[in-house]
Image (cartoon, rainbow, N blue to C red; front, side, top):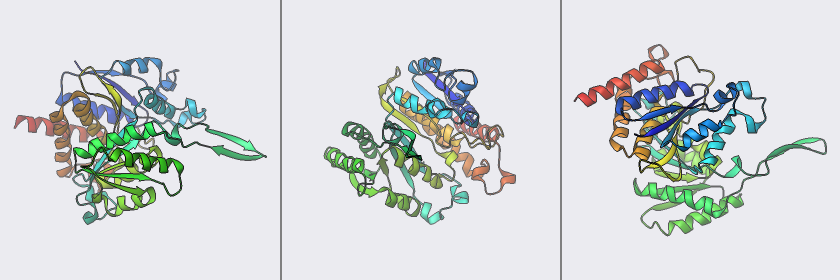
Amino acid sequence: MPHIAVLGGDGIGPEVTRAALTVLRAVRDDIAFEHCLFGGAGLAAGLPAFPESTRVACERADAVLFGAVGDARFDTLPPSERPESALLAIRRHFELYANVRPARVLPGAQRVSPLRPEVLAGADLVVVRELAGGLYYGEPKARYARDGVRAAVDTLAYDEREIERVVRVAFDLARTRRRRLTSVDKSNVLETSRLWRAVVCEVAASYPDVALEHLLVDTAAMHLVCRPSRFDVMVTENTFGDILSDEAAAIAGSIGALPSASFGDARNSCGGRFGLYEPIAGSAPDIAGKNRANPIGAMLSAGMLLEASLADVDGNRRIVDAVEHVLEAGIATPDMDPSPERAVSTTEFTEHVVNALVSVAAC
């Protein structure tokens, strides 16, 4: 029986994770779920943000389904002890170096996206973000005083091995799609980007069937909102990928609608890839507990889990089809509905998706 560790976390994390689990159970009845404390939820229980018991549960799981971290109650703690540190720690512990974030036009997105319908048309891309290196992990990292003046330092560092492994993930993914890869860097300024571009070019020799282009990050950001359909797979370093994939939320109509999966080299007991699956929206404390959160990103993340970790391509397709069926019917949470008085709650949207799954299965 597949075993999934469930880390609801903070803010809207538990709400959207519950929604995803409801949908998963409607698709599969043979999965065991183990709920674990993580982030601020761990701190509130008097434990570290990434408790030892959670680490052990994740190590024996076939995949991890995660909600969000971030809790203002703990903002006064040192950075290494805050809820957000748990996410960096779990990525580092499991060597999850490749973050895969798909973004495409969803039914109804034209109603709420700031992009014109003709700009949105045909947009379907994946951002592959390097997840284990760069500014978020580099040392030294500190705040200090210099001659009585406050100062701070963050270190951006990569080696060729870190770059090559994530770039190969992106090339392999491009081979399953439209065989186009855009590598994003800042090689006109940064030495790390010059190394990045050199390694990408070396790896490209093994993929003659994939068309490669290089873009500076500022140019890529512009094209992402002006001509998103030009992109197929985009690969970039940690910080650039974090920013660009959030920008890509304009394509889907809401940041709450974007899923993601994080992988390393590990396999699981089901013969699939061990991965951590999460919506990219964050904890959204302003709407936490109000039953207004968009669960689509969590649901689609659960679908990615089925396909990549449990080799259940049909299960993923069923979830995607059910979500799109509900959106096509004009049913959406407030962030994706231009008429707030007509919008449905998180639980109502989830019920509609489950009903769509049942009705399609009956046919």
